[in-house]
Every structure is written in structure tokens, then in C-alpha cells.
Length: 454
Image (cartoon, rainbow, N blue to C red):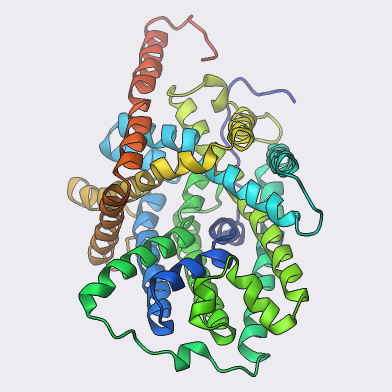
């Protein structure tokens, strides 16, 4: 395909429904089928489990309503890259974009692709190498498809998101209404231990829950392609997060309705065990199919949104120049999509995605906290600047989210100081990269005839 060397603007084609489905589809991947087991392992009580899922959803909603203010003020491709660069300077924006490309988003794409292939193996026995090949093939299919227009990618996203909502909804209904067993959450009681002893397990459970809710920010990365962004960005962020909260809370109620809390804690795939309790052997096949649909759709969302970060960086002269070019007809950042797909495939092939993600998982929460604090800073620096949407509950919602984000960062450092140190070094490796591209950018301004693809 020919590439438009002028790097013309992206096309605003995404509706409120498209934007909402991209966010919902990106959040709901495989976590809701697996994470409840980890939560049950930390909190052997149905009421406490439900409390953590509800509170985690509320915290995520607080983050969404806060970030939504920035999305309305800066409705451009790049999301957090743009926010951090505008608020704290280009270096901080670059470090986020660098981390997203090297690990945060690329490793997420790799991990989700492997999960997709692994559960596909339920229907077709696959070797370890075959799982990697199928995972890479799925990344390639999604990458190529999204080269042909953001609207095509959105149509696919809408379909898979609706399918996963339907599949999860069926599972919820089966568990809640088609079982004669005693509902575990009604029969379980709070554990007989002091609140101080519960604090640690509850925090660990909350970390797992917030990871399951992660992805609510994705629509801000494609803000440059959303119609009426001053209205639709904040609406899609909030609506999507609310939809997921309802689905997650109901799913956990369903699991607790058919499984004892002890069985949940020891389960490898809670959703499969819950479905088996209602459908028998057919339950495992149903859940495997649901995970396949869910992971494929989620990865489509990450492929669409992630590439826009690197596109935005390149447009500022702070990444590979080709990544800032768009196709003259399809108006998609094809080089950025391909570069992202290639790197994610390398991570799949080497099997390094999981460890890399572990190293920098705390970093994403640092960037979340910085972005939310940026709302407070901009309110003070630029009080008279028009805000299409003002964060609901400000400043309380912003402060509460920031405190939770920082708590997660501190706990991650305490729990795995070695991983945190390696992650910090990986992020800091973006500093020389930033100055390299910044230097080239300044040179090209001084010598406009100079040209390079780096």
C-alpha cells in the first residue's frame, strides 16, 4: 500500500457507540474468567470479595471521570502521551510512549494473543510452538485488518464486544437462575480476624481487581478519530466503565452462586468451573469459546489504540518518522500499526512478554497518577481555559484515584523490589532515546534539507 508522506490527519469516523465498544472490549479480555480465583484466594469471604469488586470498579470510574476532562481538552491522537507531554513536558510524554511501545501495550497484546491461542487449543490440541504461531498470526490478522480503516476495525470491535457481552451474560444468567444450589455469598460470613489482618489480603485482592478493570483509558488514544470528541470521549469513558462494573459484579455473583469460596480459590479457571456446575462437560467448551471471543476482541482494541500513541510521538519528531505517516486513502497510521505488530510478535516468539510486563506493571499506575494529578495542575494553571467536560466529583475523585494508584506502586516496590528496579531502568532507558530523537528534531529544524527515516 502507498503511504502518504505528508502524514495527513486521521479521519474522525468513530461514533459514541464505536468508542464505547472499543473501551468495553479492551477492558474485558480474559481477566474476569480467571482473576476471581486470585481474589478468593486472598479473601475467603463472599461479601468481602464482592466489596472489593465494587470498590475496584468505583476507583476505576473515578480515574475515568478524571481523565475524561483531559480527553475533552486535548482530543488528539495519543491519549496519555499527549496529556503528560502538555502538562509535564515532552520528556514525560515520551517516557510514557516509550514504555507503552517497549512493554506496556506491546506486552499486553502479546499476552492476550497467547491467551487466545491457548484457549483455542481446547478445540484443537496445540503444541507450545503452534500456540505461538497462532498467537502471532492473530496479531498479524488484526494489524492488517486495521490498516484498511479505523471504521473497519471499529465494526469488528463492535461485533466481538457484543458477542463477549452476550456470552458473559449467558453465563451469568445460567449461574444465577438455573441452579438449585445454595448461594455461597448469602451463606458465607466475614472471617473471624481483626481488621488489621485483613488489610494485607484486601490490598492484594484489590491489585488483582484493578488489573481486571484496566483498559478504561483506551479511547483517549484514538481521540483524533472520534466524532464530536468534546462530547463523546467523556461519555464513552464513563459509559464503558459503568458497563464493565455491572458485568463484573454480576459475574462474580454468578460464580459465588454455584461455587463454594474454597473451590473458587483453588480454581485454574473459575468461569469454566462455574459453567461446568450448571452445564456439565459442555460448560468448559462454552467458557473456552467465550475466552477465545473475548481475547480476540480485546486485542483488536489494543491494536487500534496503541498504534496511535506512536503515531502521535512520530508526528512530534520523537519517534521513527515513518510511524507518523498515514495512508492517503484509508487514513490509518500503517507503519505504526506494522511496527507495533512486529514487536509484539517478537515478544510472543521469545516468550519474554510476561516477564517484561511484570517489570513495568507498576509504571502504568505512576503514569495514571501523573495524568490525574495533571487535572489538578491545569485547574490551577489555566482556570479560564474552556473545558468541554469537567471531572465529576473534582477534586475528591481525582485525589482518591491518585492515592490508590500510588498505593499500588508502593506495594509493587515492596513486594518485588528487584522487578521494580529493573522496570525503572527499562523506563529510564527512554531518556537517551528521547534526547536522540529530540536532537535529530532540532537538527532538522536548523537544516531543513536533512532527511532520515529514523
